[in-house]
Length: 488
Image (tube, rainbow, N blue to C red; front, side, top):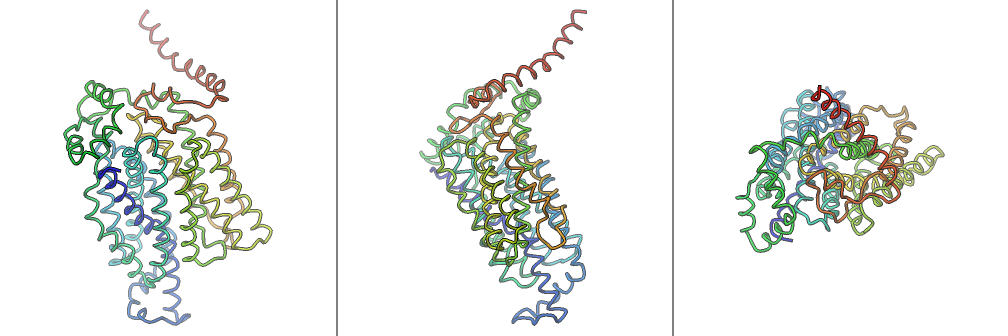
């Protein structure tokens, strides 16, 4: 790896490690506040060092009924971030948006620690969610665009692995922080100390090329021979074509055919399939993550093992089966594991076995998630890639938001209807993957022609011709009508 690639992956690894701290903050806050309020009511004896810090917990206990809305506010923030993340990174660059969001995200833990007010807490949770979503969008694109085609799967697997390790690291930190203030400070201060390290993250080479920022690319090339070789390898097939395309477009603007790209049948079909996969994956993944305490195991140990169960996802790139087969396998196994977990929970299975099957389903859906993220980057042309990613991410966040609004069953466990959705959604998505092309080892598409040249499944050729012929007829009708009006 070149120094620039090491800079990208090293810094993004640190960002994703800390990103998980605030992602599961609501789970930790509920446990900490519940314990603090019990001690304040005299139902539990305070431990050493806890009695002197009772001011903030006492004030939080007054408005503890607001705390369950923190997860909903965070999911709303993720939804809002999906609306602005792709467009803003297209306009201002992935590096600029990433750095701004990382700084705001790190500061998000200090405000509730100093000012524990309900409305302020919910506003900060929403803003933190916006930043988290934008960081996800920019980070995955940066990681993939700084990786050669043959190794892109490792880039997509590496960031979720760092997030899972951060989940494991955040659990003991939260366990060692018995008060509201200590919890927020212990999760925020490590992020603040690492902020200066992120300034050396380079910009996306493809974005610089499309924006004709060749002086920045030349500066990157001049850093070292390894960086020059890396950039030449990443851009060798796109340099001349992208330069010619940008000469025909206005400076700093989008290509005039961007909207045409979004309306094209190939892009629309892929957008619909990836959007469904995002919704189904969000419902399954976050339904298990946010209800991990419903399996009869302690919150902190369950959260630790929840992160530990995700770490084998780093080994998925060793399965050299291609994007589509791995996606189908992961989706099917996730649905099957969740279904078995549902059956055992309804027939009084052991909590450890039920939770193990649910975590297996979560591991498989996580693998499907990062492959889906990589798949989305490889399926759409460069001119509209970030917009399509934003739309797919929007559907993902809608699934998260719906999940946070579903009330638990009266006994505190995951409801029957929810578990049926968690198990059936991925299995349906497994079938939809048959309509997608294989993009493993293929250069990123820069045009609709590149998308059409991507290899499709042999067995789906007839169905694709039928869909293409039908959509082609509907697309030519306006043109024929316009020609008739011209003749008149």
